[in-house]
Image 1 (tube, one colour):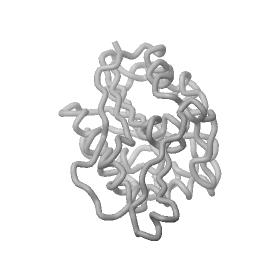
Image 2 (cartoon, rainbow, N blue to C red; image 1 turned 45 degrees about the vertical axis):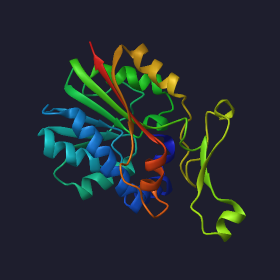
Image 3 (tube, one colour; image 1 turned 135 degrees about the horizontal axis):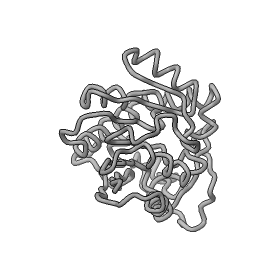
Image 4 (spheres, rainbow, N blue to C red; image 1 turned 90 degrees about the vertical axis):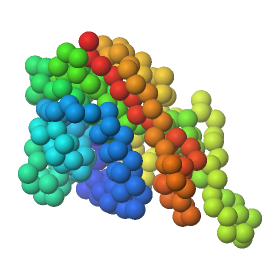
Length: 241
């Protein structure tokens, strides 16, 4: 993940989110989508930029063989402590991975593509560790609706009338490459076209593209409420030829 996750404050901020109500909603949505794309395929699977390890643990249960890697020593330490049966290593995706030699049937980059300072290099390195015909599954924050383009607001009148916030979309082409995700987290803004082209340039072929959404509404303003209205998360599946 990005350099900001290499600080205790950045890692802790991410962990607080992923363990929050919205974080648990996100986990459920992502796991349903990712597991459906895996089908009956077994391991080995690499959870690249695995964060605190929740997805790696689920992949190990489903696929038999799974390991996670992340650039943050703090997050890898957390993963080892909370998922002691898992295999976790520190790795910078922008550099050649130690597990080279076409090792994995599937590599998953889950909600972390925006954290990569050099996304193009990371995709090329991921390509080298996939078996021919292997899958590269990416889930990303939809750059057309998610922050920093999309901001949920309700204004003074809305507050007085106890209305739920509505999404305000700001000019897409005015977004800067770097922005603040949280107090201590500074990811990168990659347009969707750039992310797809980075994967194609690495040698992948796009085979599946999906909006992730909720089928039922929520009375609370949370991620469920947001995903029912707008496709804030996208899943893209690529294949190594």
